Length: 296
Image (cartoon, rainbow, N blue to C red):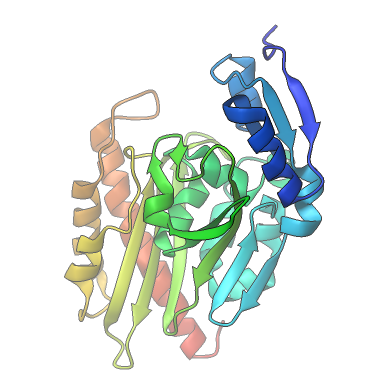
């Protein structure tokens, strides 16, 4: 039977209390929220913290989706299920509902959190791709206060983020930009499993109906997912048609670094990166047009 190594357990009563515990316990302490990533790693002895700081009592403080000015702000303890069901979030970022429908299964979605998903920093993580696509920023807190880190700087590589030892991810902020929409698509070996390849796309059109900007975030096809600035540069000013999306798909395939494994060959994953990029950009465009016509 696989069991974690012996450890000590603390239960935080607030974000400030959690940070105090992390400072006191030192580098061998880990935060646990949903636990669906950390606990399996502990059972396999791939992670061996001496202390666990349970933050599940912080849902009342850090579990929310709210609009503030031209941003939607999401607390780090917001559960997957709440992201799936939030109409406020879906109004501006339907990409979240696309992604949450294909993340794991109901027990995981009922317990897992946005903060846990991002801080795990698995290259195949769906919400990492989503937040990169949306040019999100992350609020990180320590005992001295908050700092805001753009997504590209938050994610430092596989299983590594900008969150320091005695720090917590508190909130994710998503900028609301007019004239745009977004979408997510994923290919997996079975429903709810890790992606073979996944893509998120955000598209904005100008008043003439041409592409003002585009961002694409990929998952499971290399150590890093980025906004792929080459796609934005190539598409800006173009008609949002199949020709433009084909160009984006080719750039996405060339930009990723997949490896051959049990999920598929590198060539197959590059093919999926191109195809899913085309599909998500087309879906984002269709959503923009449906909104303009009053159909969404």
